[in-house]
Image 1 (cartoon, rainbow, N blue to C red):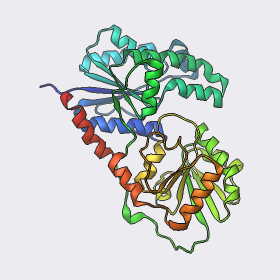
Image 2: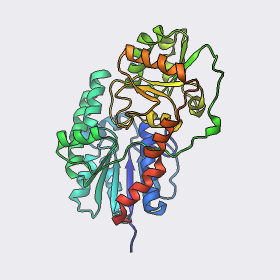
Image 3: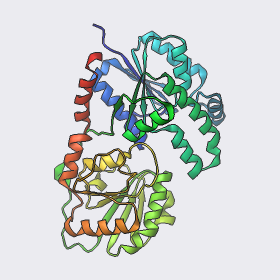
Length: 379
């Protein structure tokens, strides 16, 4: 019996560059499909300008040559690449007799329409990182009116994607409900964010309980929801936390060092590895007030068993109710109260219950086993 062949299509490099949550999630999906369907049966195609050589079952197509080309692609509705490159992908699907094409993100409407029109004998699966219509609405509201034209094209592309999708996967129930509300389509499967477990119990840093300065930690890439949340926290919460120090770690946050640093706030910014910060004696704070999908750093922090004090948005999609070590805060007073309360009884920023929650719900090995059962008719 012939094995099911899978082609995963990404809009960015995920093998050699995984420096944000979206890329980490796409790579998780790639690993998940390889473990479930067999590495030899899963192909990966990325639209990227990264100059890496193709490898076995891994292919790259240049996304665009110039900024002008990129603008033309957006105006034509192909978004990630040219119409000719879309046809190259369709030819690849035919040549390799692909059974399932998995699109990472819901903005490949142009290519999906062509696949359907040409009558290819393959199913269209879509993994929804977030509702792109809403994501770009937020960009228009919080960043620039210049995103309005891309928003119009993306809204149209997403509509075509869901009209033609055979199987829809989401990160959260919130996104599943929005897809039903906006596009009238049901979600087939929820795949919350998961990670391979790389935690080392021996590296949990134990400190002297008499330490005078209590440490807080924020980890996240410098993009609008994270920046706005950090600015709010630094301006409204940190001035009222005497005896506490906050470290801000994450790609490009050094660009905001002058604005955010205070006597009790240090901006570390981009680092080569995050593990030493996760293992350090810090309580995690996650003040994020808007956004989409799941916050990848939340699952990552759970893997390390970190005490987490976070907003509703930062905890969206995670089953955390009643879990000791995870505290929900949305106002200045709530953050102040929980930080003070937690600091009285926890001196290492680590909690076994948080770690156990990760192992039961957000560990990739657990998810692989569940997906093998769900997709067994295809194996």
